[in-house]
Length: 400
Image (cartoon, rainbow, N blue to C red; front, side, top):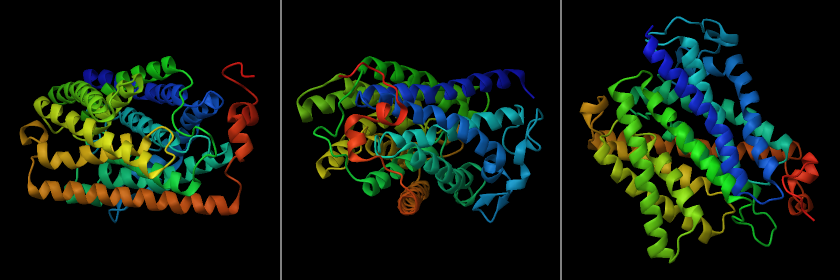
């Protein structure tokens, strides 16, 4: 066990943990003022529920001994069995295995809250909790195993450094399925009508801070690789933001504060899968792709009329999807053993398309089944009046 690596990964774990409250502020600030607390609560409650899922079976299914390339062995780490202070030679050779357990937990915690921005105000709390539980078991955990738990995608040679596929692609395409199943809100202004851009800015800042742990922690040790991922994260953030702003100015004719915030998040989502496989010069190109492709995706979903309230599919889904494929184009073998090639490009493209389709299909079916067996939607009247007052009997602001 290396004390430096352990200290570094404890810091990264805490930083990723902070991202979930950061996401709550980001989404809460962008939400309608009548539903701020409800949307923020969806992020916070994930910490409690997902932690118990991870302890009782989730971690074993994701990282236990591989069963046919599809899932891990649930009994390996059930109720923290064999999850102690001794490093694990397979998953984390220089830090306590319990710390690896916690680091991976924080990734799992934030994924469903990412989706929640798309179906804002269209799931009641019962529906959200059911989705949180079943989606974590049916989508996040299997995909995590396929990519990071020595599942079939890993055996193909597919790579995802810090979650562009496992987290952002799964969340983004689940978001797309959810907005199709749940439909539009019957509001005069169904798109972004931010309640508090200062809160959204605070949330964005917390996401920036946490993302450095999110990406550099993918190295699982302090050193050259984590430093390169750290550097690429900063460059991807900056490049994505500036290109997004330029696109907004030249294509839409104006730039607003939301463009600054959203552009930076698009850059971060896109750099995430390739942060540990490319050189910093290439990170500029990743940000360039994020600023253009994610912008086109958001414009497309607005043109089609999808009520993706906070742009989850266009920013996170397409960002993670794009960054995953770019590994096959921009990866440098000297960074982390993976080099750009036609073969690697096909593996990356095939793997991320498979994951996107799987997440979309399972989410679509899951929401259909849940909706058929119980009431998971708030009424139009409740949506109009706001979920804070009607479902929580609380308000963020004094509203007449």
